[in-house]
Picture 1: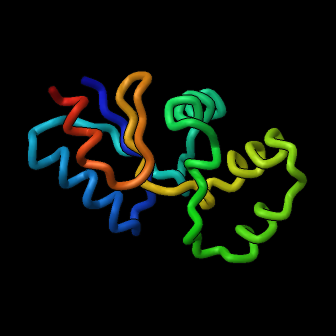
Picture 2: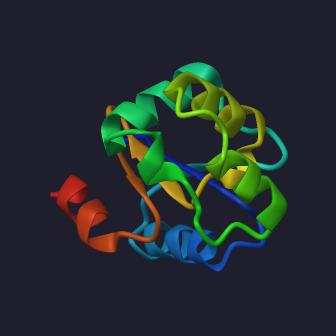
Length: 116
Protein backbone atom coordinates (compact mmCIF):
# COMPACT_ATOMS: atom_id res chain seq x y z
CA UNK A 1 0.00 0.00 0.00
CA UNK A 2 1.40 3.37 -1.06
CA UNK A 3 -0.13 6.16 1.05
CA UNK A 4 0.45 9.84 0.30
CA UNK A 5 -0.68 12.61 2.62
CA UNK A 6 -0.94 16.08 1.10
CA UNK A 7 -1.22 18.61 3.88
CA UNK A 8 -0.02 21.70 5.65
CA UNK A 9 2.50 21.46 8.50
CA UNK A 10 0.37 23.55 10.87
CA UNK A 11 -2.94 21.80 10.09
CA UNK A 12 -4.27 19.79 13.04
CA UNK A 13 -6.23 17.38 10.81
CA UNK A 14 -3.07 16.67 8.82
CA UNK A 15 -1.22 15.87 12.05
CA UNK A 16 -4.07 13.57 13.12
CA UNK A 17 -3.91 11.78 9.75
CA UNK A 18 -0.16 11.26 10.12
CA UNK A 19 -0.70 9.92 13.65
CA UNK A 20 -3.43 7.55 12.38
CA UNK A 21 -1.06 5.85 9.93
CA UNK A 22 1.94 5.96 12.29
CA UNK A 23 -0.01 4.20 15.06
CA UNK A 24 -0.92 1.39 12.65
CA UNK A 25 2.64 1.00 11.39
CA UNK A 26 1.73 2.04 7.85
CA UNK A 27 4.37 3.92 5.92
CA UNK A 28 3.28 7.07 4.16
CA UNK A 29 4.76 9.94 2.19
CA UNK A 30 4.01 13.47 3.40
CA UNK A 31 3.85 16.27 0.84
CA UNK A 32 3.58 19.84 2.15
CA UNK A 33 1.09 21.67 -0.08
CA UNK A 34 2.44 25.09 0.81
CA UNK A 35 6.07 24.14 0.20
CA UNK A 36 6.11 21.64 -2.66
CA UNK A 37 2.48 21.46 -3.74
CA UNK A 38 0.88 18.93 -6.04
CA UNK A 39 1.36 18.59 -9.75
CA UNK A 40 -1.43 19.08 -12.27
CA UNK A 41 -1.60 15.31 -12.80
CA UNK A 42 -1.92 14.63 -9.08
CA UNK A 43 -4.54 17.38 -8.78
CA UNK A 44 -6.60 15.90 -11.63
CA UNK A 45 -6.32 12.37 -10.24
CA UNK A 46 -7.48 13.47 -6.78
CA UNK A 47 -10.20 15.69 -8.24
CA UNK A 48 -11.58 12.71 -10.14
CA UNK A 49 -11.39 10.42 -7.08
CA UNK A 50 -13.26 12.82 -4.78
CA UNK A 51 -15.91 13.91 -7.27
CA UNK A 52 -14.70 17.32 -8.43
CA UNK A 53 -12.67 20.30 -7.30
CA UNK A 54 -15.68 21.62 -5.32
CA UNK A 55 -15.13 18.82 -2.79
CA UNK A 56 -11.50 19.92 -2.38
CA UNK A 57 -12.28 23.56 -1.52
CA UNK A 58 -11.53 24.64 2.05
CA UNK A 59 -14.49 26.83 3.05
CA UNK A 60 -12.58 27.79 6.22
CA UNK A 61 -9.49 28.97 4.38
CA UNK A 62 -7.52 31.55 6.40
CA UNK A 63 -7.07 33.81 3.36
CA UNK A 64 -10.65 35.13 3.18
CA UNK A 65 -9.83 37.58 0.35
CA UNK A 66 -8.51 34.77 -1.85
CA UNK A 67 -11.53 32.62 -0.98
CA UNK A 68 -13.88 35.47 -1.95
CA UNK A 69 -12.01 36.00 -5.22
CA UNK A 70 -12.23 32.26 -5.95
CA UNK A 71 -15.95 32.18 -5.15
CA UNK A 72 -16.71 35.06 -7.51
CA UNK A 73 -14.55 33.91 -10.42
CA UNK A 74 -16.44 33.18 -13.60
CA UNK A 75 -18.46 30.01 -13.53
CA UNK A 76 -16.00 28.36 -15.89
CA UNK A 77 -14.74 25.26 -14.04
CA UNK A 78 -11.40 25.49 -15.82
CA UNK A 79 -10.76 28.97 -14.40
CA UNK A 80 -11.52 27.82 -10.88
CA UNK A 81 -9.43 24.66 -11.21
CA UNK A 82 -6.46 26.67 -12.48
CA UNK A 83 -6.77 29.15 -9.59
CA UNK A 84 -7.01 26.29 -7.07
CA UNK A 85 -3.95 24.60 -8.55
CA UNK A 86 -2.08 27.92 -8.53
CA UNK A 87 -3.12 28.85 -4.95
CA UNK A 88 -3.10 25.53 -3.11
CA UNK A 89 -3.88 27.26 0.19
CA UNK A 90 -7.51 26.93 -1.02
CA UNK A 91 -7.35 23.13 -0.81
CA UNK A 92 -8.81 21.40 2.24
CA UNK A 93 -6.31 19.22 4.04
CA UNK A 94 -5.35 16.52 4.56
CA UNK A 95 -5.77 14.79 1.25
CA UNK A 96 -4.91 11.13 1.68
CA UNK A 97 -4.31 9.13 -1.47
CA UNK A 98 -3.80 5.44 -2.04
CA UNK A 99 -3.44 4.62 -5.72
CA UNK A 100 -6.56 5.83 -7.53
CA UNK A 101 -8.50 6.33 -4.26
CA UNK A 102 -8.43 9.60 -2.34
CA UNK A 103 -10.18 11.24 0.60
CA UNK A 104 -10.28 14.93 1.54
CA UNK A 105 -10.28 15.87 5.21
CA UNK A 106 -9.85 13.68 8.27
CA UNK A 107 -11.74 10.51 7.26
CA UNK A 108 -10.47 7.48 9.24
CA UNK A 109 -13.59 5.49 8.32
CA UNK A 110 -12.63 5.66 4.63
CA UNK A 111 -8.95 4.92 5.29
CA UNK A 112 -9.96 1.88 7.35
CA UNK A 113 -11.77 0.43 4.29
CA UNK A 114 -8.56 0.77 2.26
CA UNK A 115 -6.62 -1.23 4.86
CA UNK A 116 -8.93 -4.23 4.71
